[in-house]
Image 1: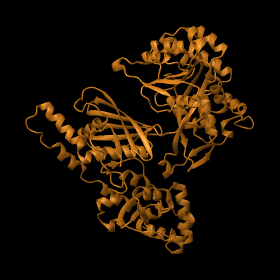
Image 2: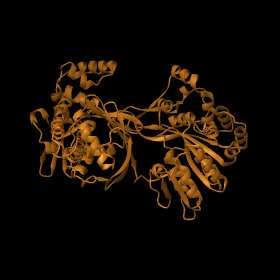
Image 3: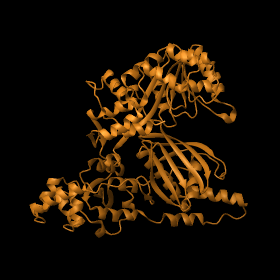
Image 4: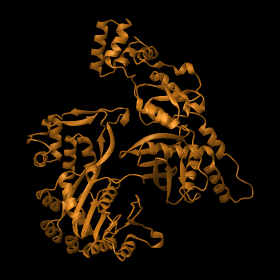
Length: 615
């Protein structure tokens, strides 16, 4: 059962398939082969005398030249049709074969045991059930991970059947049922008599929000986002439909297209469970809710804004059950790690973390707090919002409606005898001045600031209105960061860059200095003259990563330590570039350089580093 806190209605149990998916999903293509390697396929078609050995060799050569799968070439040349090829593959894989077109209409209660997004992503479909056994059509019957996951979710024994791609596509069409008709019926229900016009609309929306189909759609929308480890859900109304996009590993993916008629009921349901005003459509609203299950507890921030075609809803998902990571796990290399440890051990002063929204600043601060969180230390935070609950830490939520701003909350915290103070974000002069005064009077202050790089944080404080001598005497270090997608370890392969690509990189980056840093820091054994001499990596693309070549994210960082020379530059109102140049001269590794180091370590790619580190 999916339990949603904040909803006035009781939670609605989902089917064992974890929800009803009626809508079209456009996320990723399932794999198109049947898990036969080239030698097995050769034995199948040559051994059965479908083609001669010479014809086979010609086919392999042609497939290589065209960069096409041999299976597809066999089908294109009409040597085999898809079903015959699937039958041959089933024999070699010791699997049962099925053709869903011959199965006919799959019972809805069986079909929905595997939600459509899962079916499309992993190339599977439930088509039969006998007692405690589930018949599962699969493009890859040897995909044990998917089989185990479905077995766990449905509590049924999975019996795999190999099917062709066209057979699977035919089965997937059965998910497209009568959701639009159901919602049209709900929307067309007449309002109750005796109520005013506004009351009628409000009452109608409330009734729509409690309808079982709407509840199920919202519940499954949330559950699928959690399953895909999405950080945000975007529900965007258009003229004729509603698009749902998930941000996965920092990139938005269009995953669902809903009929336009669902929009009022969908938004109303989300407003109900987030405790927002259901009849307010002209003003932005913000709310929160929680989704709990045995194996996760997710806090969701909900934001609605009026747009041309309706109301757009964005939900940010925060995993409250996530364990604190170490600095090494976040991606800090040894020089940056040593600089942070050295500065957080100081008895007072400020450590700032900078970067755009969604760059992992809060996670870095929570990691540092977890390091400092001992019985002999009083740690207090003022946040907007509180993203993660940390046992043993006093966390305060900003509430501007009642006058509880960052500055007001910070002044209150200073009367609570804190050792360490964390400020969610320095946004204005008042908060900035309170922060630096706290750092000046014997407290360790941790805070975030929105700037493009570490060097820009110090001039930013000057722009806000903080006195130069206060900045110079209180700020110990500044961390700049971005999040990069990590190469999928299941399809990772080596690659080398060519001279033309390196020449283009040299126009933007100081590659010679980068190579010196790599040698200095011990990431390469001997100094290289070019990046072409080094081995890099990429993800080929597989089912585990949705064919993207990437899975999960980690940070790239630059850590600027405020030395006496940097302090002098602050007092002189030096620009960002001058501060950064001095820091580099003193050994600071720039963010893009840290990214290139992680690229040669096989953690990410150069293209990904360039994408996220461009200012």
